[in-house]
Amino acid sequence: HKACIGEGAAPHSQKAATLLRFLRARSGDCEAAAWLLEEALDWRADFDIDRKIREWRSEWAEGISPRVRVLQKYTFMAPLGLDLEGLPAVAIRHSVSDLGGLCREIGMETMLVYMAAMIEDQFERAHERMMERGHCLTNFIEVWDLYHALSPAGLGAVPFYKKYASVFDKVYPERLRVCFIIRVPWAWNTVWRFFEAIMPAATKKKIRIKGCRADSWLEEFRALLPDESIPDWLRSDSA
Image (cartoon, rainbow, N blue to C red; front, side, top):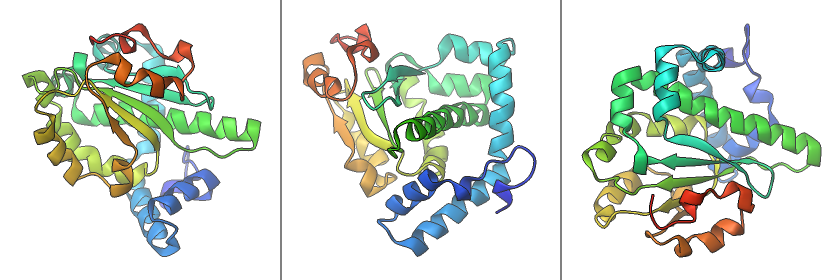
């Protein structure tokens, strides 16, 4: 595929872990998995994601461009640390973010590349871990903090996810091992119906929705994460 050849391109279609994820995403149906993989590779080629991520990593390492400085100051996505499998877990803190404002400042496409680069960093670590242990694990833990998610700033995230949710599902299927959604607001059911409608059925089964009390999630966290990967804000009832 054209997404897998050329200068700087990664051989996505030749990576066993990638093929396994797509196969699982289609419940072992090889033909359906091949169609999904082809769609994902078409998108990768059309969007030129490998080049954009490569350039973004260099820009981020330099740390001097206006959009990098904005994200360094206001980002709401950050690694928690390694889970008990040695893979990076990620926190998405919409409780303290304004994704709509970030997109206005740096553009939706930059936000997409930033998120995609973080996901691909996770896959690179998973590959390293597989080579170390001989054990293939291709999915990760995410924690979404939704306190204040129904504020104007929180609702500002909806246009971004409405536009790109299908991209994440198509290009990075079966990346979730478990997703904790914590501190959900009282009117969460209304918003959940929107996200549920665009979410694959397999993904819904991996989601654990929690309230605002830390004791409703800490025991489950400790079954998956070492103490050093659980920051203070996740041990508290407040965001």
